[in-house]
Length: 90
Image 1 (cartoon, rainbow, N blue to C red):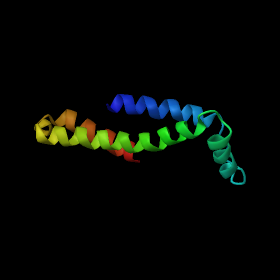
Image 2: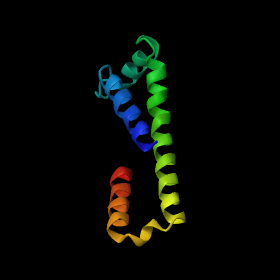
Image 3: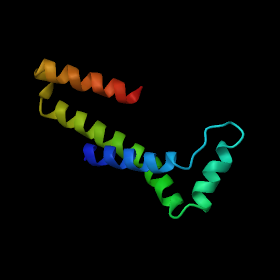
């Protein structure tokens, strides 16, 4: 599930980046342009926004599963996982 969420985030992010401008005077109008003028732009934007939430829900479920099954006893694997968690949250 995490891999699927990550692929959705990257794909929708690339599509959104094609139409977004980060200039402070035109950023809002570019988001409005994506939602109104780009074909299915509103779907891509909402998939991207909700995909981030789903990614973190799946990530926390994965960590919870690791805690439940005692995977923290494998210290090297657990430390790599916690490092990746902090990297994703940053």
